[in-house]
Length: 160
Image 1: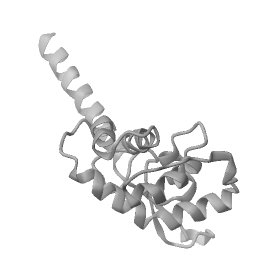
Image 2: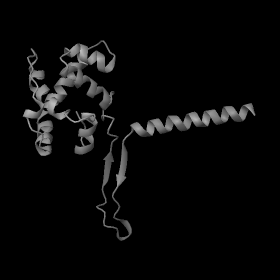
Image 3: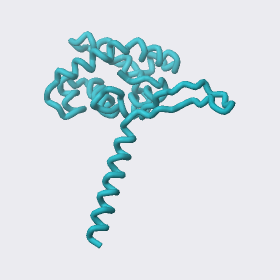
Image 4: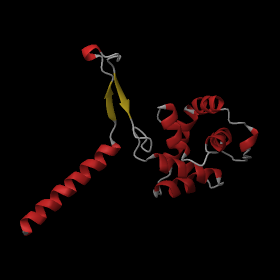
Protein backbone atom coordinates (compact mmCIF):
# COMPACT_ATOMS: atom_id res chain seq x y z
CA UNK A 1 0.00 0.00 0.00
CA UNK A 2 2.85 2.39 0.74
CA UNK A 3 4.43 1.81 -2.66
CA UNK A 4 1.14 2.51 -4.41
CA UNK A 5 0.75 5.77 -2.48
CA UNK A 6 4.24 6.86 -3.47
CA UNK A 7 3.64 5.90 -7.07
CA UNK A 8 0.33 7.75 -7.07
CA UNK A 9 1.91 10.84 -5.55
CA UNK A 10 4.74 10.75 -8.05
CA UNK A 11 2.41 10.36 -10.99
CA UNK A 12 0.17 13.16 -9.68
CA UNK A 13 3.22 15.39 -9.20
CA UNK A 14 4.43 14.61 -12.73
CA UNK A 15 0.95 15.36 -14.08
CA UNK A 16 0.88 18.68 -12.17
CA UNK A 17 4.33 19.69 -13.45
CA UNK A 18 3.43 18.78 -17.02
CA UNK A 19 0.21 20.82 -16.75
CA UNK A 20 2.10 23.83 -15.38
CA UNK A 21 4.66 23.59 -18.17
CA UNK A 22 1.93 23.16 -20.76
CA UNK A 23 0.27 26.37 -19.60
CA UNK A 24 3.41 28.45 -19.95
CA UNK A 25 4.60 27.09 -23.29
CA UNK A 26 3.37 28.28 -26.64
CA UNK A 27 0.88 26.20 -28.54
CA UNK A 28 0.69 25.47 -32.24
CA UNK A 29 -2.59 25.36 -34.14
CA UNK A 30 -2.84 23.84 -37.60
CA UNK A 31 -5.47 25.24 -39.96
CA UNK A 32 -6.21 22.02 -41.78
CA UNK A 33 -6.83 21.91 -45.50
CA UNK A 34 -6.79 18.13 -45.68
CA UNK A 35 -9.70 15.98 -46.91
CA UNK A 36 -11.47 18.85 -48.66
CA UNK A 37 -11.49 21.22 -45.64
CA UNK A 38 -11.40 24.93 -46.29
CA UNK A 39 -8.37 25.71 -44.10
CA UNK A 40 -5.31 27.55 -45.28
CA UNK A 41 -2.81 24.82 -44.35
CA UNK A 42 -0.70 27.06 -42.12
CA UNK A 43 0.46 26.55 -38.57
CA UNK A 44 -0.08 29.40 -36.12
CA UNK A 45 1.53 30.04 -32.74
CA UNK A 46 -0.78 30.65 -29.81
CA UNK A 47 0.46 32.14 -26.55
CA UNK A 48 -1.15 32.28 -23.16
CA UNK A 49 -2.21 35.91 -22.57
CA UNK A 50 -0.64 36.07 -19.10
CA UNK A 51 2.80 35.05 -20.38
CA UNK A 52 5.07 37.37 -22.32
CA UNK A 53 7.01 35.46 -24.99
CA UNK A 54 10.78 35.45 -24.52
CA UNK A 55 10.51 37.15 -21.14
CA UNK A 56 11.17 35.68 -17.73
CA UNK A 57 8.36 37.63 -16.11
CA UNK A 58 4.69 37.48 -16.95
CA UNK A 59 2.13 40.11 -17.86
CA UNK A 60 1.22 40.56 -14.20
CA UNK A 61 4.79 41.66 -13.41
CA UNK A 62 4.71 44.19 -16.24
CA UNK A 63 1.33 45.45 -15.05
CA UNK A 64 2.68 45.98 -11.52
CA UNK A 65 5.76 47.74 -12.91
CA UNK A 66 3.69 50.11 -15.04
CA UNK A 67 1.20 50.73 -12.24
CA UNK A 68 4.05 51.57 -9.86
CA UNK A 69 5.49 54.01 -12.39
CA UNK A 70 2.09 55.65 -12.73
CA UNK A 71 1.92 55.91 -8.94
CA UNK A 72 5.04 58.11 -9.24
CA UNK A 73 7.56 55.62 -7.88
CA UNK A 74 10.98 55.96 -9.40
CA UNK A 75 12.11 53.37 -11.92
CA UNK A 76 14.30 51.35 -9.56
CA UNK A 77 11.59 51.14 -6.87
CA UNK A 78 8.94 50.15 -9.43
CA UNK A 79 11.14 47.35 -10.76
CA UNK A 80 11.88 46.13 -7.23
CA UNK A 81 8.16 46.12 -6.42
CA UNK A 82 7.28 44.22 -9.61
CA UNK A 83 10.01 41.59 -9.62
CA UNK A 84 11.57 41.53 -6.17
CA UNK A 85 15.01 41.99 -7.75
CA UNK A 86 17.28 44.70 -6.43
CA UNK A 87 19.32 44.83 -9.65
CA UNK A 88 17.52 47.55 -11.58
CA UNK A 89 19.45 47.64 -14.85
CA UNK A 90 16.75 45.49 -16.44
CA UNK A 91 14.17 48.16 -15.65
CA UNK A 92 15.88 50.44 -18.13
CA UNK A 93 15.85 47.62 -20.69
CA UNK A 94 12.12 47.22 -20.12
CA UNK A 95 11.60 50.95 -20.66
CA UNK A 96 13.60 50.79 -23.87
CA UNK A 97 11.45 47.89 -25.11
CA UNK A 98 8.32 49.88 -24.21
CA UNK A 99 9.64 52.85 -26.20
CA UNK A 100 10.18 50.64 -29.24
CA UNK A 101 6.56 49.46 -29.04
CA UNK A 102 5.10 52.90 -28.22
CA UNK A 103 3.71 53.47 -31.72
CA UNK A 104 1.95 50.08 -31.60
CA UNK A 105 0.36 50.96 -28.25
CA UNK A 106 -0.86 54.28 -29.63
CA UNK A 107 -2.25 52.61 -32.76
CA UNK A 108 -4.07 50.09 -30.57
CA UNK A 109 -5.56 52.92 -28.51
CA UNK A 110 -6.62 54.81 -31.63
CA UNK A 111 -8.49 51.76 -32.94
CA UNK A 112 -10.11 51.25 -29.51
CA UNK A 113 -11.04 54.95 -29.59
CA UNK A 114 -9.98 55.70 -26.03
CA UNK A 115 -10.27 59.48 -25.69
CA UNK A 116 -7.07 61.20 -24.71
CA UNK A 117 -8.71 63.52 -22.17
CA UNK A 118 -10.41 60.70 -20.24
CA UNK A 119 -7.10 59.46 -18.88
CA UNK A 120 -5.13 62.65 -18.42
CA UNK A 121 -1.92 61.89 -16.63
CA UNK A 122 0.47 64.67 -15.72
CA UNK A 123 4.08 63.67 -15.54
CA UNK A 124 7.12 65.67 -14.54
CA UNK A 125 9.77 63.04 -14.69
CA UNK A 126 13.43 63.59 -15.40
CA UNK A 127 13.40 60.49 -17.62
CA UNK A 128 12.47 61.20 -21.22
CA UNK A 129 11.23 57.62 -21.48
CA UNK A 130 8.65 58.19 -18.78
CA UNK A 131 7.53 61.53 -20.22
CA UNK A 132 6.56 59.70 -23.42
CA UNK A 133 5.31 56.43 -21.95
CA UNK A 134 3.19 57.41 -18.95
CA UNK A 135 0.37 59.23 -20.81
CA UNK A 136 0.05 56.27 -23.18
CA UNK A 137 0.13 53.76 -20.32
CA UNK A 138 -2.54 55.74 -18.47
CA UNK A 139 -4.84 55.34 -21.47
CA UNK A 140 -3.80 51.73 -22.04
CA UNK A 141 -4.46 50.71 -18.44
CA UNK A 142 -7.70 52.67 -18.06
CA UNK A 143 -9.74 49.47 -18.23
CA UNK A 144 -10.21 47.37 -15.08
CA UNK A 145 -8.40 44.44 -16.74
CA UNK A 146 -4.70 43.65 -16.65
CA UNK A 147 -3.72 45.95 -19.50
CA UNK A 148 -0.74 43.86 -20.58
CA UNK A 149 -2.65 40.59 -20.87
CA UNK A 150 -5.62 42.38 -22.46
CA UNK A 151 -3.34 43.95 -25.08
CA UNK A 152 -1.77 40.58 -25.89
CA UNK A 153 -5.15 38.90 -26.19
CA UNK A 154 -6.65 41.61 -28.40
CA UNK A 155 -3.61 42.21 -30.63
CA UNK A 156 -2.21 38.67 -30.67
CA UNK A 157 1.24 40.22 -30.24
CA UNK A 158 3.64 40.27 -27.31
CA UNK A 159 3.38 43.31 -25.05
CA UNK A 160 7.09 43.91 -25.60
